[in-house]
Amino acid sequence: MSKRLLLVGSNTIHTYNYLDLIAGYFEEVTVVTNEQREGRKEHTILADFDYSLKSLIATRKRIRKELIKFRPSIIHVHQVNSYALYTLMAARGLGIPVILTAWGSDILVAPRRGRLMRKIVSYCLRRADFLTSDSSFMADEMNRMARPKHPILLANFGVETLDLNAQRENVIYSNRLHKKLYNIDLIIRSFAKLVSLSGHGDWKLVVAATGEETESLKELAEVLNLSNHIEFVGWLTKEENAKWYARARFWVSIPDSDATSISLLEAMAYGCIPVVSDLPANREWVINGETGWIVSPDNESCLLQLTGLDEDRARAINRKLIEERGTKTVNRNKFIQLYTNALSQK
Image (tube, rainbow, N blue to C red):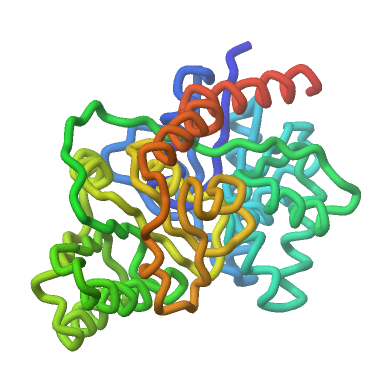
């Protein structure tokens, strides 16, 4: 019998990056998502995953109908939210293994929004047959809510690098979304302090990505007289993003909450020295003062300490860590082994 996967997840690049990661293992793949993704060839079922009674009934029925028709060997759900809730309810009694992959905010943020959200997350964690997390810290949080504890696979979606030959410049690179969570405004304020210091007049801050705060961030840069020091480059291709990683000396990301960021792994792989929030998941990758800097996400002076670190040594350590834990090959093998185990226990 051919191996068939039903993958449930939102229409984001991360979902499809994952599908590319495990490409070739399954003979047939069906994706259940909220919106059609242009350029993808997978058989796709569209459904509404809003938290509403209407969606709960209609989406559960839609997924149940597809499960009975498609008869997947494995169901893999990405994010512990309504995508997991509706799928687990639809799959009840069918005997199909369900793997649930947490992404970060669904475990670290959503359960704090209220009792109902915590109950939903807890229900999903308990009902799934297999769980995966990209950090030990998040796995611990998942087990606190699952009860009884599950074995949790630690794996991320992996990174791959392009072969680039670029000269390092006095550039700090930021490429997280322009949302309040990511504190891009604080990065800009801290950078303004950095360039005001003697000997730092040639430094440049490159801000990639966009979001709901983009215009206000540009206005802030104008107010702080950073027009000659900051560049907003918007959404970039994979190649353009890689070039900035390769040119920049430092990469900065200081969100209030985060699991293992693929952007962090990419930055380390390309040799950027990371400046990251003091969060448990980041401490699993960065040694403060040795391989990067760990800072408070509310400290406007967070970019003033970028000295006293052996950058060549830090880059060598970081690249070795990525080779051991962060490549696509390493993590593909982990997920494939999980699928093999799930099928053998079916």
